[in-house]
Length: 122
Image 1 (cartoon, rainbow, N blue to C red):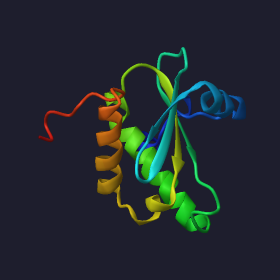
Image 2 (image 1 turned 90 degrees about the vertical axis):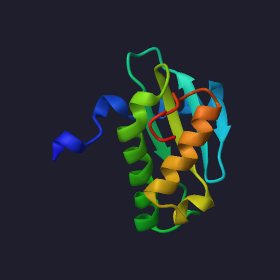
Image 3 (image 1 turned 180 degrees about the vertical axis):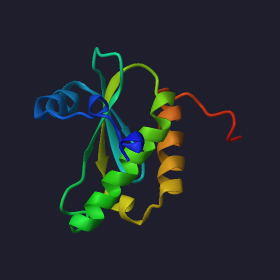
Image 4 (image 1 turned 120 degrees about the horizontal axis):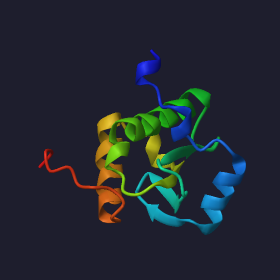
């Protein structure tokens, strides 16, 4: 099962990294998410996810986190540069399935110039 997981080196784990990205990073807003990003000076990009209790109970919050991590696991190699990406879930994220998350995040990240477009999809 370890084969399909997201390695620890690809996760933002320390509170200080979240705070640094939040205060010094740039922001991209989508209808369901806010994405904060900041160059991390490492050789790989990392992902962090924040879902408040306003979104729903633990089951709902964990599902949203799994969807974002799966997006990063499968599409992370298309992201440009080595940045820390913090995804903050909004109320609209509860109703999304993985395909909706993929479309929304790809569209806005490509529009911001953070992700290479996937020519195979078109």
